Amino acid sequence: MKDHEQYMHLLFLGTSAGVPTKTRNVSGVALRDSKGKGWYLIDCGEGTQHQVLHTKLSFHSLKAIFITHVHGDHCYGLPGILASAGMGGRTAPLTIVAPAGIKAWLEATCEATQLCLPFALEFIDSDELPSVEFESMTVTTFRLSHRAPSFAYGFTETKVDAALDVDKLAQKGIPRGPLWGQLKQGFDVEFEGERLKSHDYLIFKHKPRKVVIAGDNDQPDLLFDACAGAQVLVHEATYTEEMAQKAGDVGHSYAKLVAAFAESVQLPNLVLTHFSPRYQLNPHVSPSIEDIRQEARSVYSGSLYLARDFGEYTLDKSGQFSELAGE
Image 1 (tube, rainbow, N blue to C red):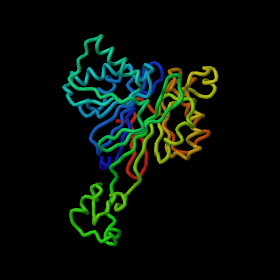
Image 2: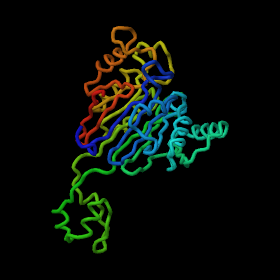
Image 3: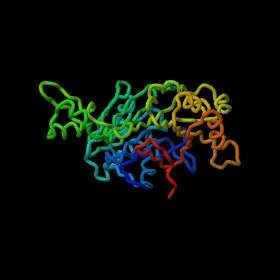
Image 4: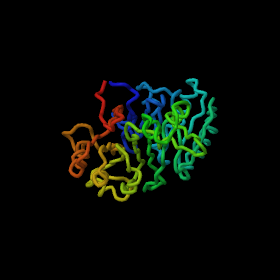
């Protein structure tokens, strides 16, 4: 692989809906930002701590956990992963962004099971959160449509490689020296009684990378604003259209619905996940994961991916998204 600092990474820890299968665990996605030297966990279904053991991820470098909604296949792994982190020697505070019900449930579970963590938990209620800032990432919250309050999280990098606009600095009469250095580092400065904003004097080498990871949702159109400027959308495709009609109104999307939305906003990359356990990996049996792929492909012309457990994807600084070959 090329220089790791050029990449954002997605690593799927679980891609099944509702219950695990022999080959797929329930929901969990790790997002690694190599510049930030840490990772973020989006959803934490039961067994996520076991999945992490099969990766190079460390609980010590976990920056935050984001829970999309309160249903068990997205959160039942939280007590276990926190206990593993504590017994592994973590002491740094950990941020959990989640609907309000998660905090109450987790606190009750810790009390009932006498789980005493050696690190502080910092809860942020996603119901009231416009956005939250981390070292090299801004995370924005978007409301979705499901049986329980559900959210998508948009991850946008904040540290983009940039060069000073030397010509503009010269025209402004700003002398070479400390002010140039501060502007280059992203700090606003005072010059001759005027406040100069750093971004006005920088030439960015590429657009900020943005990945949107959605929870359960039966109205993909709600992600119109979230997908503005995004290179990648990760969204559930629990069923095909035919199976969704049989299931009735359960608050989930089917492949064609999501893919048609992605096509309508000209999204370059779509990753489908959260497949019903009915769908098997073998393309020669029915129903098969391949049915979901074919239905989505019939209406979507961008780059389409169907997530698999331990599948890893990279988004480079030029905005190119690709799947890594399995090791």
